[in-house]
Image 1 (tube, rainbow over the protein chains, first blue to last red):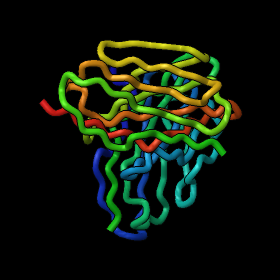
Image 2: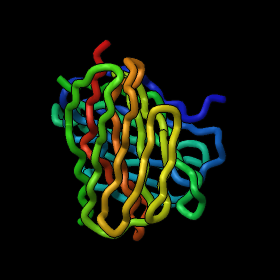
Image 3: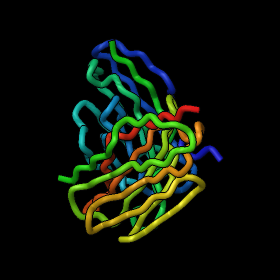
Image 4: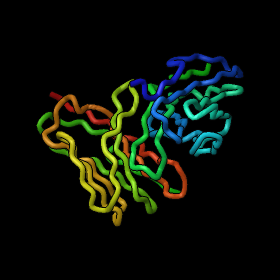
Length: 114
Length: 111
């Protein structure tokens, strides 16, 4: 079982460069999420998609855009990377809130912006 | 705004001892999660707690939820080194699909 797959696992960007983080899940989940994790701050939600065709801002959306390409895939784009976006990014998926299930996480993308 | 506070944020303990991690949250919620994260790894679900008085146990870990006090606890019994990790609680926002996360408790268990 692949679960939630994120690519790439590591990335170094120069300030101002752009990149897209890819996420795919094979569990037929409706909801997908992008989080960033910074030391001592837990996880903060960037964007989420409650279902295919919808996306919404989370707690820290500035500087990011997302696309829910289909039910399986949810990508996160940094249009002009800044050092403040250095972080570990996690994609997660969940069936939906009506069911009693937990969120499943990808392995993370460690991004450094220099 | 929902806030989630964990304490302690760091805990170093000896094998064989018992200890409790606390998770307080600021507004009404009916669902709370506990996750484990090993260094450099992803997050692994431990427990989902749904109702007041809910208690779940897995091995040496036991989690409980008191929705009236807005408090969840994660109790470790007779700790072993393999339980060293960072533990997070997350609270479900009823109004949308968001989970609000605590800062995590880094647990180090010394042989």
